[in-house]
Amino acid sequence: MELSFDMTLSEGYRSRSQIARRLTESWIYNNMFCPRCECEHIKQFENNMPVADFYCPDCGNQYELKSKNGKFGKKINDGAYNTMIERITSNNNPDFFLMAYSRSECRVSDVILVPKHFFVPDIIERRKPLASTARRAGWVGCNILLYKIPIQGRISIVSNGSITNKNYVLQKTRIAQSLKIENISARGWLMDTLHCVNAIDAEEFCLRDMYNFEELLWQKHPANNNVKPKIRQQLQFLRDKGVIEFLGNGYYRKVK
Image (cartoon, rainbow, N blue to C red):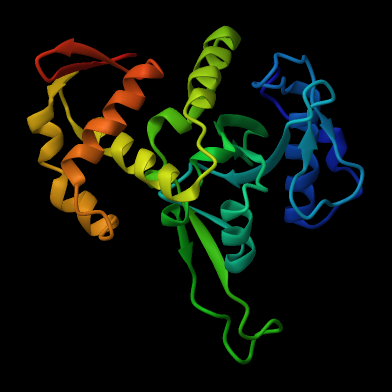
């Protein structure tokens, strides 16, 4: 994996956005393996697809690329809000590659994989409609709230200019895949429970620690009047998937 861009690909382009798109997409095409099935190279769709940019020729999994000059903040600009919500709720969503790069150094600094099933409506922020004077007046875009995606769904492939071991990436992707839930409501519960587990500073925790989030979880899921049993159910699911380990007597340990 070579982190520097091939700057010869920018020849003939003047627009910064066109150059960035050319360089980042070419980098993915030339360097990225499929984290789902270990295929050595993924391919790019020939035309602009409404859903994805790349696909794996072996397993067929699709990927969309979001790139940014400089480090990622808490939010990532995306397209139309309604379109994004429809994609999430219909499970017609690709995995995301999030790439941060340095324009001045012509080099990739970070690449993060976010599997599709970590997307829930709660992480999509509705932006204000464009002003009446804008060319697309009334259009409503959205932001992906990166900080609301559990760490289990943010798999580092390149971090601060360092390449992550491929086997580690594949292992983390397999664990993330085991958490796949099609039902959007059930998926929301799992993501929120994961957030609570991750928010506990200690490696080992107990049910009482999780019950401290009861009010927060009820606010997010007001239709559920049995939050404590739901917490226990979610912890059992996470235990079965190898994300946490049950130690007995209501105690758990996070699995690294």
